[in-house]
Length: 154
Image (cartoon, rainbow, N blue to C red; front, side, top):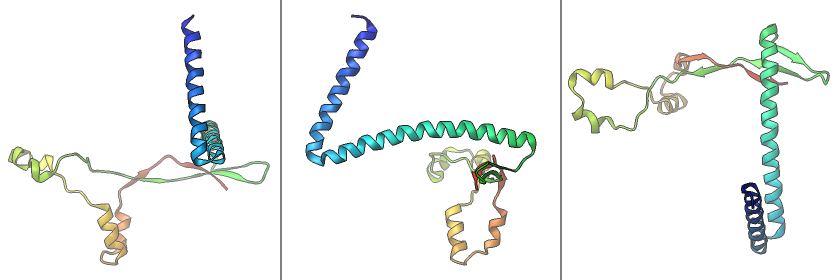
């Protein structure tokens, strides 16, 4: 028996074992639930295929729009795709698995200023803004850099 024949036989046996398990589980959860699981799995596989296809089309359309300097394109259906400019929040901190108070005694004084950095806790700051304790004008100071425009459908 060749190696490929052995693999085919092994896959068939594994498929049979999974089918037997499904029949046993159907006695507990019902045949409809097993059918729902099969349909769900089929939809997940279909979604993966569709998402891959969407990514290909999106890259192609964005490239043409960028090359031609077009901000929106209409299809014959009357609907359009457009480029939505986005800003990415710039993350400036390097987070580590170290607790500052635990490593402090090991860091020589002359290196402390390059090891320790002050960072802003975004969640606390936004909570203070939402409660009115900090002026929301501070939101304009958030560090942003241009991101990749998103292709949207209208």
